[in-house]
View 1 (cartoon, helix red, strand yellow):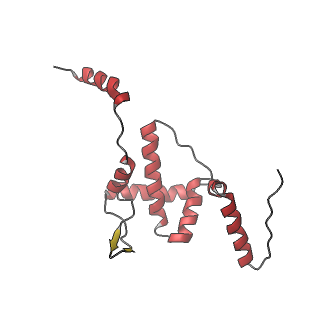
View 2 (cartoon, rainbow, N blue to C red):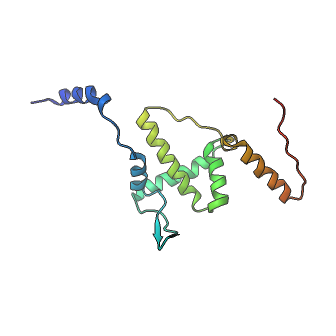
View 3 (cartoon, rainbow, N blue to C red):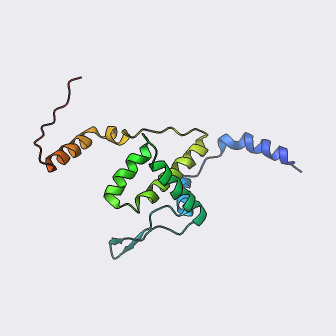
Amino acid sequence: MMTRFGARRAAASARPTIKKPRGLSAHLVAWAGVCPGNYASTGRKRSAGCRRGNLHLKTALVGAAKTAVRTRDRNWKAKHHTLKARRGALRAPLAIAHKVLIAAYHMLAAHQTYKDLGEDHLNHVDQKRAARRLVQHLESLGYEVVATPKAA
Protein backbone atom coordinates (compact mmCIF):
# COMPACT_ATOMS: atom_id res chain seq x y z
CA MET A 1 0.00 0.00 0.00
CA MET A 2 1.42 3.33 -1.06
CA THR A 3 1.08 6.26 1.32
CA ARG A 4 0.17 9.74 0.27
CA PHE A 5 3.78 10.92 0.48
CA GLY A 6 5.01 7.92 -1.50
CA ALA A 7 2.50 8.75 -4.24
CA ARG A 8 3.74 12.34 -4.34
CA ARG A 9 7.34 11.20 -4.68
CA ALA A 10 6.40 8.79 -7.45
CA ALA A 11 4.50 11.51 -9.29
CA ALA A 12 7.39 13.95 -8.86
CA SER A 13 9.90 11.46 -10.22
CA ALA A 14 7.66 10.63 -13.21
CA ARG A 15 6.90 14.27 -14.01
CA PRO A 16 9.61 14.85 -16.64
CA THR A 17 8.42 11.86 -18.65
CA ILE A 18 4.77 12.94 -18.65
CA LYS A 19 3.98 14.94 -21.77
CA LYS A 20 1.50 17.75 -21.57
CA PRO A 21 -1.41 17.32 -23.96
CA ARG A 22 -1.71 19.97 -26.65
CA GLY A 23 -4.57 22.39 -26.73
CA LEU A 24 -5.20 22.66 -23.02
CA SER A 25 -5.33 26.46 -23.17
CA ALA A 26 -7.97 26.24 -25.90
CA HIS A 27 -10.02 23.84 -23.77
CA LEU A 28 -9.70 26.15 -20.78
CA VAL A 29 -10.81 29.16 -22.79
CA ALA A 30 -13.78 27.22 -24.19
CA TRP A 31 -14.77 26.04 -20.71
CA ALA A 32 -14.55 29.59 -19.37
CA GLY A 33 -16.76 30.82 -22.21
CA VAL A 34 -14.44 33.51 -23.55
CA CYS A 35 -13.78 31.92 -26.93
CA PRO A 36 -15.57 33.07 -30.07
CA GLY A 37 -18.57 31.07 -31.17
CA ASN A 38 -18.63 29.21 -34.45
CA TYR A 39 -21.74 28.97 -36.57
CA ALA A 40 -21.40 28.09 -40.23
CA SER A 41 -24.17 26.88 -42.45
CA THR A 42 -24.13 26.23 -46.18
CA GLY A 43 -20.59 27.50 -46.43
CA ARG A 44 -21.36 30.88 -44.85
CA LYS A 45 -19.89 31.98 -41.55
CA ARG A 46 -22.40 33.68 -39.29
CA SER A 47 -22.15 35.48 -36.00
CA ALA A 48 -22.65 33.15 -33.08
CA GLY A 49 -21.69 35.27 -30.09
CA CYS A 50 -19.64 33.56 -27.42
CA ARG A 51 -20.13 30.35 -25.50
CA ARG A 52 -21.98 30.23 -22.21
CA GLY A 53 -19.15 28.79 -20.16
CA ASN A 54 -18.54 29.44 -16.48
CA LEU A 55 -20.48 32.60 -15.69
CA HIS A 56 -18.46 33.62 -12.61
CA LEU A 57 -15.08 33.10 -14.25
CA LYS A 58 -16.21 34.88 -17.41
CA THR A 59 -17.43 37.88 -15.39
CA ALA A 60 -14.15 38.06 -13.48
CA LEU A 61 -12.09 37.79 -16.67
CA VAL A 62 -14.03 40.52 -18.47
CA GLY A 63 -13.67 42.75 -15.41
CA ALA A 64 -9.94 42.06 -15.32
CA ALA A 65 -9.72 42.79 -19.05
CA LYS A 66 -11.50 46.14 -18.65
CA THR A 67 -9.11 47.03 -15.84
CA ALA A 68 -6.04 45.90 -17.81
CA VAL A 69 -7.10 48.08 -20.73
CA ARG A 70 -7.06 51.21 -18.55
CA THR A 71 -3.43 50.76 -17.46
CA ARG A 72 -0.71 52.81 -19.10
CA ASP A 73 1.99 51.49 -21.42
CA ARG A 74 0.57 47.98 -21.64
CA ASN A 75 0.10 45.67 -24.59
CA TRP A 76 -3.53 45.06 -23.57
CA LYS A 77 -4.39 48.74 -24.10
CA ALA A 78 -2.99 48.83 -27.62
CA LYS A 79 -4.64 45.52 -28.56
CA HIS A 80 -7.98 46.71 -27.17
CA HIS A 81 -7.68 49.91 -29.21
CA THR A 82 -7.14 48.01 -32.46
CA LEU A 83 -9.87 45.47 -31.68
CA LYS A 84 -12.35 48.18 -30.72
CA ALA A 85 -11.78 49.96 -34.02
CA ARG A 86 -12.11 46.77 -36.05
CA ARG A 87 -14.72 44.68 -34.19
CA GLY A 88 -16.59 47.12 -31.92
CA ALA A 89 -16.60 48.32 -28.33
CA LEU A 90 -18.57 45.38 -26.91
CA ARG A 91 -16.53 42.58 -28.46
CA ALA A 92 -13.10 43.97 -27.59
CA PRO A 93 -13.24 43.34 -23.79
CA LEU A 94 -14.19 39.71 -24.37
CA ALA A 95 -11.28 39.28 -26.79
CA ILE A 96 -8.91 40.80 -24.22
CA ALA A 97 -10.36 38.45 -21.55
CA HIS A 98 -9.55 35.58 -23.92
CA LYS A 99 -5.93 36.79 -24.17
CA VAL A 100 -5.69 37.31 -20.38
CA LEU A 101 -6.82 33.74 -19.68
CA ILE A 102 -4.39 32.25 -22.20
CA ALA A 103 -1.55 34.32 -20.72
CA ALA A 104 -2.50 33.22 -17.20
CA TYR A 105 -2.57 29.57 -18.28
CA HIS A 106 0.88 29.74 -19.86
CA MET A 107 2.31 31.61 -16.85
CA LEU A 108 1.01 28.92 -14.49
CA ALA A 109 2.09 26.06 -16.75
CA ALA A 110 5.63 27.39 -17.17
CA HIS A 111 5.98 28.75 -13.60
CA GLN A 112 6.94 32.20 -14.91
CA THR A 113 5.94 35.74 -14.07
CA TYR A 114 4.12 38.01 -16.50
CA LYS A 115 6.30 39.93 -18.93
CA ASP A 116 4.48 42.76 -20.67
CA LEU A 117 5.50 43.53 -24.24
CA GLY A 118 4.72 47.24 -24.04
CA GLU A 119 2.17 49.45 -25.72
CA ASP A 120 4.15 49.93 -28.92
CA HIS A 121 4.77 46.19 -29.43
CA LEU A 122 2.19 45.99 -32.21
CA ASN A 123 3.98 48.75 -34.13
CA HIS A 124 7.31 46.94 -33.95
CA VAL A 125 5.92 43.57 -35.05
CA ASP A 126 5.55 44.74 -38.63
CA GLN A 127 7.05 48.19 -39.14
CA LYS A 128 6.25 48.37 -42.85
CA ARG A 129 2.57 47.71 -42.21
CA ALA A 130 2.49 50.31 -39.42
CA ALA A 131 4.21 52.89 -41.64
CA ARG A 132 1.79 52.21 -44.49
CA ARG A 133 -1.19 52.55 -42.13
CA LEU A 134 0.10 55.85 -40.71
CA VAL A 135 0.77 57.25 -44.20
CA GLN A 136 -2.75 56.30 -45.29
CA HIS A 137 -4.15 57.98 -42.20
CA LEU A 138 -2.27 61.22 -42.92
CA GLU A 139 -3.36 61.08 -46.57
CA SER A 140 -6.98 60.69 -45.48
CA LEU A 141 -6.55 63.88 -43.43
CA GLY A 142 -5.42 65.74 -46.55
CA TYR A 143 -1.62 65.61 -46.31
CA GLU A 144 0.77 64.50 -49.01
CA VAL A 145 3.31 62.16 -47.46
CA VAL A 146 6.50 60.57 -48.75
CA ALA A 147 7.90 58.08 -46.26
CA THR A 148 11.59 57.26 -46.46
CA PRO A 149 13.40 55.14 -43.88
CA LYS A 150 16.03 56.89 -41.75
CA ALA A 151 19.64 55.89 -42.34
CA ALA A 152 21.06 53.73 -39.56
